[in-house]
Length: 225
Image 1 (cartoon, helix red, strand yellow):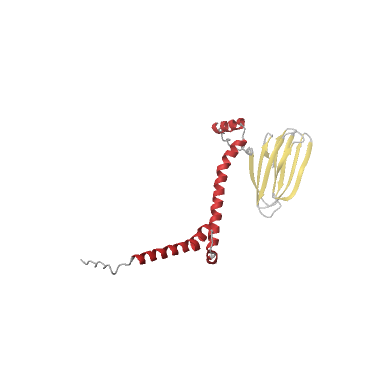
Image 2: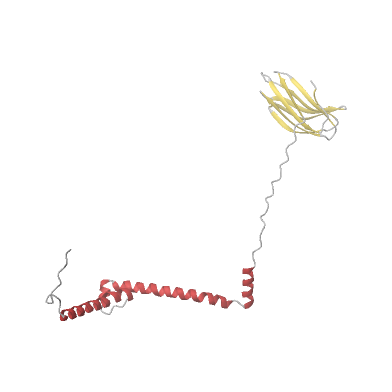
């Protein structure tokens, strides 16, 4: 184990040297306090050295921030009492009651289902017939005067000529005629009691399939020819 030698009395600093070092340290500390710490922390620059070193500006910023923080804290402390002073006793009691009373529970509105769209009624009758080139056919419905029947017909394979008409009790009427028509729909209102319907003829060079659908106030749908 190595032990250091104790210094001799001659090697130790004298009292005068210690006092001189202490005085020098105190002077250096004082200079740093006046030239550095005071300008940087408190914006106090009695020697002007702090402004030359840019420390005074730093201290001014710190002081400004401290002042603003103190002002904000004071404003928060005075805001609550001033707001309370503006309320009258009656208003204060109303506020306390409103705070204590729970808000009423609002029941959620029930979603109403959308109204159902009425489905279109089914067709009462449906007939299909194949017409060769030049062939004609007739369909009639027995109807009372003022009765209404809905219809829809389509010719697959080519258009046809048609005549929508009625006859009975010595009377006759033509509701509508057409040439080269592939499809038609609508209503027939019987002008008198009798037979009301359609005559179709295929003027194409190929066969066509005629499809006729009807519904409404009529007695019977029949093929006349």
